[in-house]
Image (cartoon, rainbow, N blue to C red; front, side):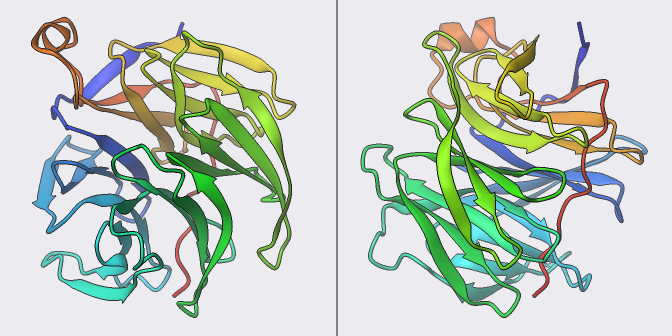
Length: 291
């Protein structure tokens, strides 16, 4: 069994969006509901946090080296400047859905961002999946999610995975080089009792690693949808995962403490922490936004 190591007992309300930064040798991650951006530096364990002006779902590095792109609840797609964390608005794709917010995102090798939205109250199927292109135009490519989660890309980027957390379903799509999605189909259905599929990432062999909200686990699925293995976690609300380290052979896992009772928090003292797992495989280099 893979050893689970706590790197940072941050007590995040809703830890999410882990992102490996090769240039900084650090892992970025966010706390959505106590809005903050966190950075954990691997060389010395240094931790830094920046309070954000509103709920933040994710960050992705820019290919030009000029900081980050982020998904904000109210302002939508934004640029973040390192150091000052100054905000420059790109655009809000959902001005008619004020209760929606961004929840998760990934960048592909073409420099595009794939980002899902959701009803912040987790009731309405108002969430959508968007593609933000390097020219700063965005396109709605799927809809009908209460809690959208995931996106993850296969090693050759011919397949995209995206999750409807409330339905407990992971979908796969055929992804063409021009950014079109086709052939939506069920990739895996998470059984009752195993929690709900949350954030995901692919390894270099095509395995899909899935965090289970309420499931106390991380699972790996083979490309054909078969469950390969399960890694038990010391917390129930496991939210997302990302590969990192110099050789992309370390798996970082985020978690949440939101909604837990006093007794549950006592039973899960590491809820909201950042963890590391030795996955036994290597991951894929994170994509960067081309705009």
